[in-house]
Length: 95
Image: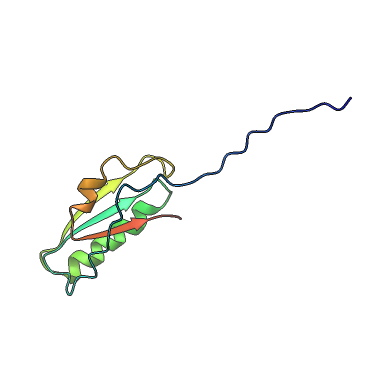
């Protein structure tokens, strides 16, 4: 008699959205904007964002940069409202 085993198949799917959000579009200029930099836990995001912040601060007057970091890329972001409160969001998703 053949040995039968149970295999549990997991299908990763994003959570269902309660409401669909629309993009606010692109800003006309970047002076005096608040920018969120969100690192999702991947290596080297801080290196990218250090340079990003250096270049943007030198080029655009009055720009305010807030940095956020998720501990792991695979867990949800519990501070998303703070990130979204800025005028522009840049998300580092991989090395």
